[in-house]
Amino acid sequence: MEEQELVQLARLGDTSAFNRLVLANQHQVYNLAVRILLDDKLAEDITQETFLTAFQALSGFRGGSFRAWVSRIAANRCFDELRRHKRHPEQALETTNSEGEEMEDPAVLKDENNLPEKTMENAELENAILKCIEELDTDFRMALVLVDVQGFNYQEACQVIRKPMGTLKSRLARARLEIQACLQGAWELLPEEYRLKNNSSHE
Image (cartoon, rainbow, N blue to C red; front, side, top):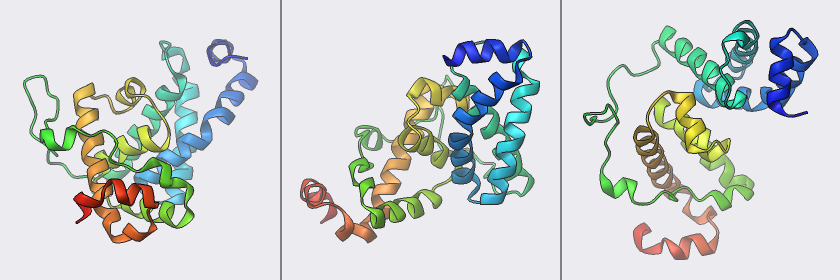
């Protein structure tokens, strides 16, 4: 059964349909929460709260991607938790333009492939990448986790963070650049083809 059919049934009170939506999305909601909060237990709590809230607010769902909708709920819960513990920076990360989009150095934005995704097959490198992700600022980490880890397209990711496309791309480009810089310490773990391709910048 398609997602939209399950949503329609769930809105009519079919709890089994909603349970199927939960089963289909709980893993990615948990992964999103744990990457933002860096706390397994809190992520479990946020996941439960997310689907409880989603069930209660289902009548207000206006269509589109259910995955993006529940992820936005989870993201809001995560930021509430971070603010509660004063772990989320209050200052703006970047300067903004007249439309409220964050602006970034063009040198950062020119390459959207900074993160060596193919190297995720290597277990040791994957651990190194995850450590680098944990060191990112929360907003940058959110953008990178949504797009590069969980596979959201840009439009879905914008729905989750409630920011315009320019802001998402700026944060994503900055996150990828910081990951690349962080991985310099694990340079020898990178595949030879990647090291050869990027040798000049490494030197």
